[in-house]
Figure 1 (spheres, rainbow, N blue to C red):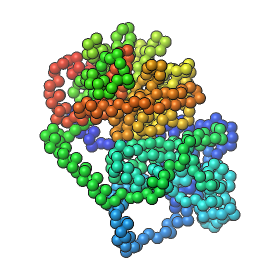
Figure 2 (figure 1 turned 90 degrees about the vertical axis):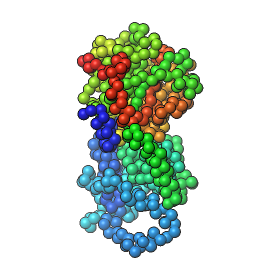
Figure 3 (figure 1 turned 180 degrees about the vertical axis):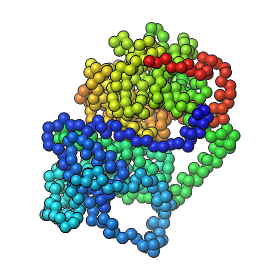
Figure 4 (figure 1 turned 30 degrees about the vertical axis):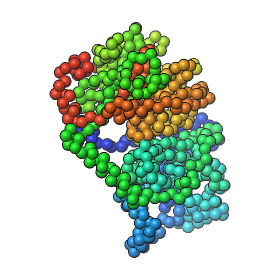
Length: 606
């Protein structure tokens, strides 16, 4: 396949992939108490599709059992509204104001949100109706089933309104997901209203616990980027499917210590969102008209240059003052951009100095193959990238090549989330030959960043359950580099897409330590954040964002998602929109500048 065909394929193939390998990190408990007894609440004996993974995690765990399913009495008996009643409802003035919103949601509801029967996964659980009392009750088939008052947790997976008797039967309350900040568990009008107000807005999902007093407490939360669409259902997919591991994570906490890691925040129900207003027809029309205007403005350029594709380049500079300290426009204007060969783009740059030479390692993405490999080159005193070569290539995608020295040896940890693992490589003939040393994790995480601190090794990494969405960063630790890695804390150290995912090695400056992260609120790799680490030891980790680098001063730059520094050299990468015709022109003139624009030599890795 040619690189041009690959570009066209990227424009048409945008399949979503799911990876639940992070869930496996929480299936085993070291607690000595008996198994947790879990009840599942659902509507009409149905649960959302994402909830199947929640149930699967519980059934595969060694510390929790699903013992009953609480369901509503409306199993197939509720009659839908007749056509006349529906038409009369549309005549009502308050509903006509948001008719376009309602229609759009109906047309865009995907298959992934249809429900399924929980008994498919747990056929052995008791089926109990929701309208129960503290006395014995009649279940399906006329059998009597006592209220299971010895439940530990009830998971409300179907937006079911549980009565007091049900809520009181669980020692640790009723757990449920809430999307948005309204009173409902899913606040679709609020989500769409936020998209209309700000395309860079985020969707907040919380796992909450409600007790017998109806007071709710947040157990976990995460902020996801939202798609620039009016479809609420499309914006359901990443938060719900990407957060399934939070349930088993908190259940394991409960089993190991009989305590749950709580977030010191109240339930995200605000007075402003209590009315939960729907976007009006006028708001929807204005939004769609603006989209048409943007399309019209781009159309002449598209017809002239062809459709566009995302291209990443690497930039380099030599500076005594780090980017963290310097004014953004001044600093970024001093970077000079390196040109990748036609059919390739370069991203994720890392620096290492060895034997007086500074080397640049990076991802070399081959468009025709649709995957990345690891390449490197040495930096001359004048800032040129010389002797570029591929040093590591696998059948799967490789990127984010963190390279570092330890005990007089050089190690490399590339991202291999597509292979559901994190592997350590050791240089046997730097920089050309690398030997697989060990597999550190068997989890599909992105942008794993290692650091040695306080006598231990640490790894910052972000699981990506839904492709393109990695808003949570977890911290692993080990006493030895090559083995013994385990979660330092069961909770994410950062769960906000605005500044969670890693963007380079840790940096020390003026006695402070900083973690660089990506801002993915607007789109993948939109900007950089420098996060100051305020506390970091075996007891916990805390950081705060202190500097935002957007890169909007560079013409054509639409994103920046990597930064590294070694000595006085600094590297970043940048995202540009390039036309396919520009790509064809570059291929036609690829004979010039052999040091950078010629095809890369074959890999020499072991």
